[in-house]
Image 1 (cartoon, rainbow, N blue to C red):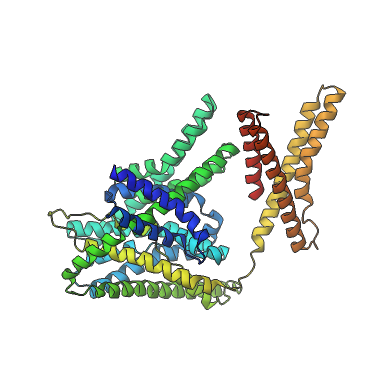
Image 2 (tube, rainbow, N blue to C red; image 1 turned 90 degrees about the vertical axis):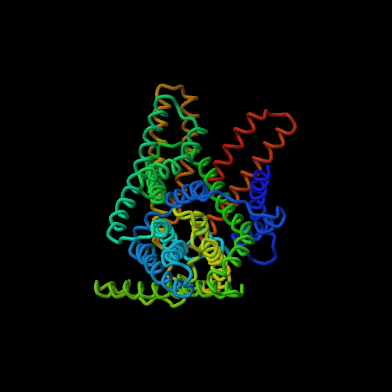
Amino acid sequence: MHTIEVVLAMLVAVVASGYLVRILPFSLPLPLVQIGLGALIAGVFNRGHALEPDMFFLLFLPPLLFLDGWRIPKQGLFRDKGAILELAFGLVVFTVVGAGLLIHWMIPAMPLAVAFALAAIISPTDPVAVGAIASRAPIPKRLMHILEGESLLNDASGLVCFRFAVAAVMTGSFSLADASLTFLWVAFAGLAIGVAVTWGVSTFQRWLWHGFGEEPGAALLVNLLIPFAAYLMAEELHASGILAAVAAGITMSYVELTGRISGSMRVQRAAVWNTVQFSFNGIIFVLLGEQLPGIVERAIDTMQETGRHSPWWLLVYVLAVNAMLVVLRLIWVWLSLRWNLLRARMRGDQGGAAVTSWRVVLAMSVAGVRGAITLAGVLTLPLMIPGGEPFPARDLVIFLAAAVILVSLIAASLLLPRLLKGLELPPDEGGRREEDRARRASSRAALAAVEKARQQLVDGQTTTNVQLYNDAAARVSLLYQRNLERGQGPDEDPDKVKRMEQAYRSLRSAGLNAEREELFRLTRHGQISDEVSRKLIRNLDLLESRQRD
């Protein structure tokens, strides 16, 4: 019963955190608020809630990685693939080797393989935490795409390196040749399994819908289970469940392009996944806060192993490890930038060779915030090694990983908004033009479809019905004609177009709100049934969601 109470308390804390960040008179990142509430829960219940490491990993990571792969903008991912791959793989290896050697040198009592495991698990970054920090000082879109792509791929590379390091601790040996071959199998088999699971499930589901009709509740549940299926199947075949979950999410984004899912189901599914993302990320940070007092206490107890009897050495370790990460990331970002500029000059691309502001370099370095993946991964450290002895320095590793999350969150929340404030980057006009082209093309297709449907409806009808169908087609066509006429003039003032669009949205929202209020009033007074009210309000909600997109 105590476990159920703690879980419910964590869920309440996640809900409360969403309101607290709005209520507090000063700005705090959402993850820090959730960590504080978790510490409060630990104080109320007098102990942290322990989870089995493997269960923790399975429960939280697959859906989060799946959703990251599903929602990341693919065009931005492929456009900046060079910079993303350099950060996601090169920086991870650079961090594992550099930070691992420095940690082992600083804490000789921590075996080298354990130091590499710690460096690997603190190498992945967390875009959710960065987004929460930058909510009041928005990160430029292209920079955010690079950070999202880095996070998507370095989750996998960091966790795979972590698994190898832990395996070296457990077996007491490490072979680079064997590890390289194993990595190839782990990586490619994991990717293939993720793609196969999503395509297979989606194809079978479409066959069921075609033969027996669509069942929204079951479809949503299947969608939620896909990342777990991909992860478990990959792990069963000794491949990377992490990469399988990521590949399953990326594949799902391409399955979406088939357009065989109804709009209402997409709205429901987006709402469900938003809830899952908010809840799981929140619970992880609440768990960090809840376990933080015990982590600190156990870390102080293990200080005897390092030969440092004063607990203040923990603070030294924390500051040193965080300084290592910042310096290593800064060096790598600078070197990567220099290399990309050199390649641009060799290609004769003068635009690509433009000097990037030092503030962008610093922002990229400070934005390396650790979060849910680091915590979820470090808590999977085994309690014992095969000989029956405790895992070396386990509590100290968990403490340092948790401290890295806290310090990186605090540092980014203080520095990132200041670095981004007033930062001028070239405007992204391509995205606006692309959106206008898409609106006009889809509107032309819609007008043609409306006209074709009108001709089919009026065929053989009476004069009265023909007039009725013509009026209905005219009303529908007006909605699409507005998209074709908007902003076509070469000298059209962008600010004027923007103000007109805002005015339209505001007036349209006012109308939708008034419709809803009237439907609620009629329902309260018993003038229409609940069933009719729900149906009409649902339609208005769908219109409003489309209006906001």
